[in-house]
Length: 402
Image (cartoon, rainbow, N blue to C red; front, side, top):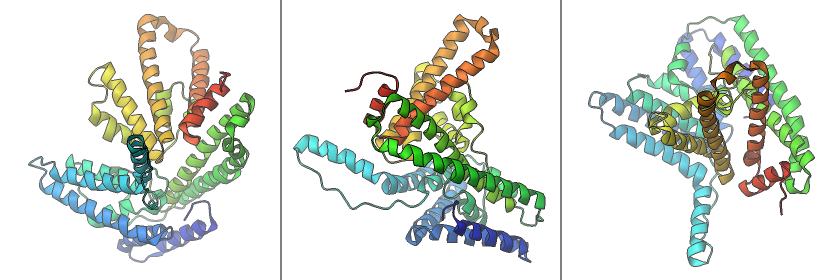
């Protein structure tokens, strides 16, 4: 069930009316769980069994982790992470792994390796997995103690199922007050946010997509000017598309009395690539930082290790977006850009500290325009194969391409 359909509008209205009309507030969480199950089952019912099975497994493992907390036993945590991440790898990344295996087999034997039947990945399994991992790690750290009802509601909360934002249980639990009265001002704010998101998605993003799609079908057939226009258009399109979905999710949650994390904060107006990532898909950035970058060592083990951790984290961030090498290339590109920007900033502040006070507004504008173009160029790796993207970028930069 997609947000930009009349069916979702009818569904949301029904959930809203029943939720606030229930005479027994204690039934409200169960109604939301049922709504989440129905929302997910509409996509492909067999996958609901998988997701609910993983949810039950995650909660059960969380119980084992809590009981072994005093002994700091990591075995239940490792088992839980292995199963949840293994499910993600199997269902989402199996084609990519078999392609790599097939290429290796052809290199060794000169013959093609049989490919298995294509597996339909469960809807939003990446979002589910990241919330499972978050829950298990925070239980291990002693930060969460949830009952099964609240945990299942956290996982199956339908506004955030298909496109996030990626929730944190500690924040979500603040709004599990089912005695709360209906606040029409919040309903108005939520509906306004939903309409704003729909306008961004349907009126602007989809219109731009119709113009840029023909360019991406044969990008090397076009000149640099058309490629730049298409690249600018795609940058606007993907921002409005994704942030529009986030707006609808946030608005849908708000009319039910919940507040979920913001996901975007004017990312194209940031003066460097690190600030861009603090403002773009913020729930993902913070997840990658807390559960991947910092456990790898963060910036605590010297500049070389910091750069390595950054590139690995961003490459895996790219892979999270899709099971294809060009997504890894996109993440790698941003990881390298962050490392270059960090190194340059340190060198500049050491060598020319007086530059901080010279024409600050002009420097801000120039830095913002430069960062925006770094991001625009990077989107080529998101929308095209890695090899084609590289050739397109060279053509955009007026470098001869054979």
